[in-house]
Image 1 (cartoon, rainbow, N blue to C red):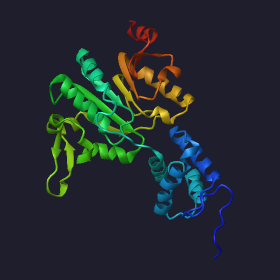
Image 2 (image 1 turned 180 degrees about the vertical axis):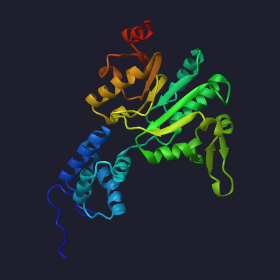
Image 3 (image 1 turned 135 degrees about the horizontal axis):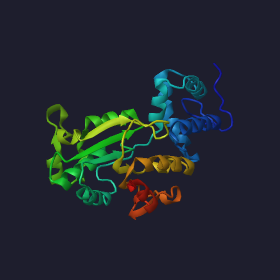
Image 4 (image 1 turned 120 degrees about the vertical axis):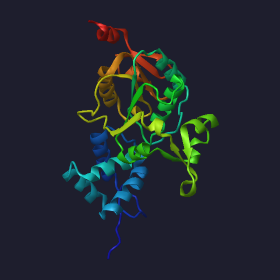
Length: 290
């Protein structure tokens, strides 16, 4: 058997040949599917993550794998492809300054609160929202409904299960740990499970922010969309925000990530606090007219 000689742009010394044409095809497919704009610097990451899919499917080249995806637009492998390229960096009480704002806001509401966590990842963010609601209302059964969505079905399963290694809660105040988590014993030692009262507050479901239809109904008091827009280009950000606006009640808050600025991509929003937005006066007025 003749050795494979990598052509220009290919990564040599690797299990699979992966050239610049393959990378550009991956960029185009994930942008079309999930709106993710992969930077040039992500080529090694793409190879590492998708090489696992080649091994799992028994396909021996990136060209064949990508050809297969393009032939089967609704196959299970598309889900695996998308999951592989989705980044899920999260933690409990990440960007902690948002949660006192959320607590104070919830206390002003006269009706049960509806909250959408639009990039739920492995569940730490929606569970943090639920803990904040419990503390705000002084009850383990606050009048709050939380919808937690993500494009990645693997991380959603982790979130719905609500089981985490102990190190995930090491930085959390001991009184919160005691109140909101159950420590594992025996075979489950070293893990914690979120208390069932919290889990009942949250509905986990798969949602692609680029999909034509979103499986959610009604309007929300709060939308969390933190640290996901940074993966989209400006036109995609604008499109998503334009779809958020009709889903926001007149008084609703929209929480963004620390490195995201929605004012440059939507004139329907105004800044209320540090990376917290609300509808502008025109939008609010339009909602409250009889």
